[in-house]
Length: 125
Image (cartoon, rainbow, N blue to C red; front, side, top):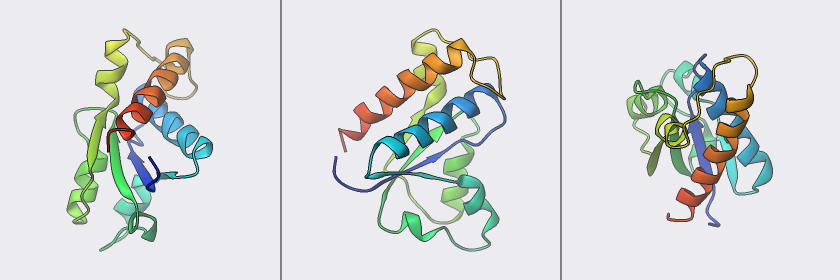
């Protein structure tokens, strides 16, 4: 995995939204080829997306079934190469984060398993 990857993730105000944001930002800080992209920035721009997406493979990470990140990008005619459901990953490990403000014990564990899952998926692109 040497290509630039932009993780465009959920920014919802739910416990899982916090988990997704934490995992995305940590992955960007730990990997030179990964950037965490702000979906709110893209939704606020009238007709375009940030240039950060121009030369990156885009991976969306959903926090819930609304999949806001993908919907916003689709409205901007931006395609992602992969969509990862954080909810499905977290449920696989029987984790249930409950705090939308600070990571609780299950939230911390969920960040770890989600990061591992994302990195594994990125190896396949």
